[in-house]
Image: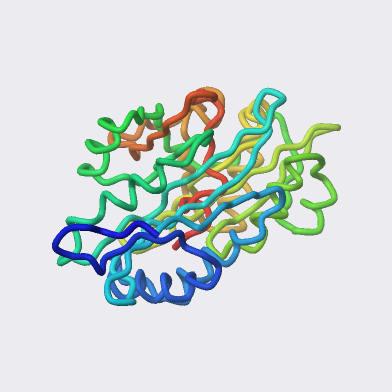
Length: 294
């Protein structure tokens, strides 16, 4: 426990344990905008507690004052194989402290970033947090994004598309199959597999709304970018006819290049990372609040 020796001796920093998750969920559900029900926050972190291969030392850090939670900085950990070696990742999710305790917020930041031999990602930072992150050694990811219309491009190479969990699990192998198993119960993530010949591509996507309508598909992960680009017509047809999405948002970096025809999005999401061992090409959005949280 990190005890403050100033005017607020009862404010302390603690790792978030399994036992703390329901209380943290209630805190975020009450305070963090937009008003998301506590059970949704609880679901989001419950699915990350027992991930395959995860050696999470905590679920982030919290602030307590007089025994109650007054701040939380949840994190999602994962261990990934990058270039033949195991790499530990820590995704920094929402960061919120009640106004009267904002002066203590940086203590949670110091606690989480003080962990050694970890690659940190911050994938939804607001402007103020971006400025802080830059001072702390974070850099921006290239998030150039295209909106691709979901029209049935029959002249492109065809692939079989399935969002049946049984088909996906039986098709995928190795670490990609582990990724699917770890995220299959995520409440907001959607999964599908593209199959062409002896090749497959696992895709994770979420709905994105326009004026409250879930008209867009936003791609979060692509296991085989070359197959994804070459079979996008089949994917677009599936997303249009089976899910009613009229366009797909996909980052050039995730797809391994721009998909044409498409429209470049004018204000892509800002995402950041900090690492001494991996590069931006090794960063994706699995094991993060982008995939797991409301």
